[in-house]
Length: 429
Image (cartoon, rainbow, N blue to C red; front, side, top):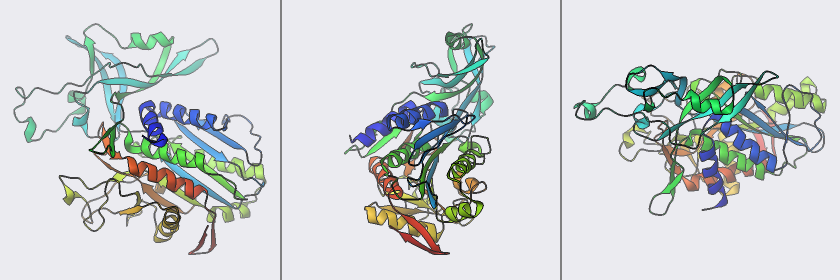
């Protein structure tokens, strides 16, 4: 496998919760010479400096300062690190026969895909210290839980369709009655609280006759997060007056409305502090944002092999077909003809294939973080992604070639000078 695919698999395997995905990104940024800044501390930002900050340990923004101390535009890419899963409400609930946890659904998922799989818990625990409270990442490397399906003998109509009740059907077990998962948490210290989710234990693996595809949990959206981070780190950031940004938000799967989500102020706050450090006036700020482009990177649906009728027949999206440009008439995706043309030119010059995604006219589509981020930051945007199957299942399928294409496209994006010379006119390169 290529180094990029190896690193993508590592990122997918490591990112068992948003907290762990942020930690994985931090490791890669630190290794590349980026310096962590605490959001609540004073910042001293140097020309050409490389920095990152985190919020709630579950969202992260990295950036390169302009090399010449001026600001004429932003190149930005945004993705998210949360996935549909089950939030742990209680580590133990009364039961006569089994040790059970109580969970609640997070995001829209294919519930049946969580049945009869080795699961664990992951996230963070909050422990008491002499000074107060400290968060610790928690992800035991063990198969701990399962959600057992009802045997066909007890539900003869199971194959005829079944409506799952998450309170009844989707609660996990982890042992015999009398055990308590809290005992495992207690190994970390005096636990006061926790932010834990169920996580599928399957590792990323290649499939297909040529190994051209891969299967893994959390492909939506850690595939975009990992590949755009690779492109960001490969970018040179040498264009005078240009600031490069890479951001990974939390809570996209539930509407992005949290402090660490795209509707929060993380990106706007960091951009304001960068502008302040550069002495940017309000007029210069508006001009710089007009000369900017943001890629909202979140995966899209490939044509299903057994149900091609679910996709728009005029715009088929295939595994291995390249980076997806996503359009929606109701602006659930931010792509316009203009921003698609600009990004498309970058990809054409870099030799990266692209394909177009549109919903069927009679099927309502999903949304992503781009249009919500636009409530906070007025920058031209384009929604992109990578094709996959079984979106929001506990294990999904995608293409290795597409992952390579995304990293190459994003690297080219960060290395391409852009300027909006007039409304509706851009120079590219």
